Length: 554
Image: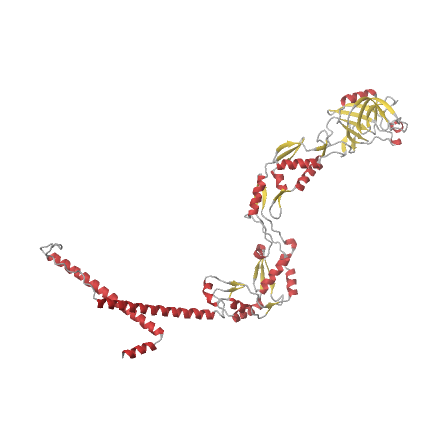
C-alpha cells in the first residue's frame, strides 16, 4: 500500500504536489497555534490555583536549598535521543516542503516572464510612443492600420508666437500612406527580455512613417505661410551689458520670430514624414539668442566692462563743454560674436570727427553786420579753430586706457580767439573792399575808422577777401617785389609800419599815395596790400597784436 501511494504521488504534477504541501504546511501551523493557545490557558489556570493555595496556607516554611538535607531535583528533564532525532527530522521535512513551495513559485514566475518576453517579440513595450502617439503593446500591423486611418484627416499645425497658428493640410499636399517596415524594425530592435525596463522608462521613439506627398505642393504651401514674411519677423537679441546709473548691467535676451527658411523646410518635412501633428515654432524653429542673461560669457563681459569705467574727460570749448564718461563708453565698449570685450576705436574716431565738425571754424565763411552797418559775408581764410584729429584721437585713447579724470582743450592744429561765431571775439580788424574803409574794433567798440586803398583789380592785384589773423608786426622795413635777373627788385618801398596777415599782404603806411579811399584803387591801387596814411597806420600798429583776426570782405 505504501509503495502504491508513493507511485501515485510521483505521477502527480509539480503543481499538485506544491498545493498538497502548502495545505499540509498550513494545517501543521494551525495545529501548532492551537497547542500554544491551549498551553497558555493551562498555565494561566495553574497560576490562579497556585495563588489560591498560597492564600489558604497559614504556615510558610523556608527551606535552604544549600543544606545537606535538601535533595536537589532537576527542574527540567533533558530530552532523549529519540526525541531529538524526531525534531531534526521534522525540521528537515519542513525545509523540504518550503523549498518545494518556493521552487514552484519561482517556476510559475519564470514561465510568466518568458511568456511576456515572447509576447514582446511581436509587440511594442509598455508605455511606448511613436512620434508622440501612444502605441503601447501594439503589433506593427496595428500601428500601420492606425496610421493609414489618420492620413485622410492629417493636418500639421504650426504653433506660432502670440498664440497664432497656421496649418498645412494633408489633402493640399496630396498626402498618402505607404506601408513600410519602420515600425516592425522598431519592434525587432527591442530586446524582449528587457521588457521590465519599460515599466519605469517610457520610450518615445521617432520613426519615419510610410507617407508620400506632392513636393511641389508642399513648397507652395510653405511659401504662402505668413510666418515666412520677412517684414513680420522679429530677430532675437542676445543678452548684453548696458549702462544703467553709471554702471554696466545685463540686459535680458529677447526671443524673436526670425526663421531660417532652409531649416524650417527640413523641420516641416521631418514632421510630415514622422506623422507629427504640430510644430512648436518657439521651441523648434525660431532662431534663439546665442547668449542669455545666465551665460557665463555675458556675466564675464559685464564684469570686464565695469572694470574699464572711471574715465571722465571734459572738453573745454569755452563757454561750451563736451564729456566722455560712462555713457560714451557704453557706445564704445563693445562685444564681438563670442562676447569678448573690445574698445571700438573707429567709434572713438567718429566722436573726435564730430567735435571737429561742431567746433572747427578754420576756412569757414562768416556772415555778420559790418562796422559800416551792412550785412556782409566774409569768405573763409586762414583763421579759425581746427582740431588735429589724429593727435586728439591718440590723446583720448590714452585717457581711456589710463581711466583719467581730466578737463582739457582738444589738441588743435589751428587756434582762434574764442568759440562764439567763428571765433573772432570782440577785438578784430575789418577791411571793407567796397567802401575802401578800415575799421578796428577793440573790446566791441570801433576805435579806428579810416579810408584806405587796396589792390588794383584791373592789374590783377586784387586784395583777396577772407578771414585771416595777423602774422606779426614790425617797423622801418622795406617792402620788395620780385627779384630781377640783374639782382635788382621789381620794386622797393620803405615803410614805417608793416603788419602782414595773408602771406605778403598786410597793413602799412603809403606816403607815395596822393589820396586814399573812393575808387582810387581801381586805377592806382596797390599790389594787394592795405595802404594807409601814417597816423592811422601808427595807431593800428599800437593796437593790433599777433593773432588778431582780420576780416576782409566786399
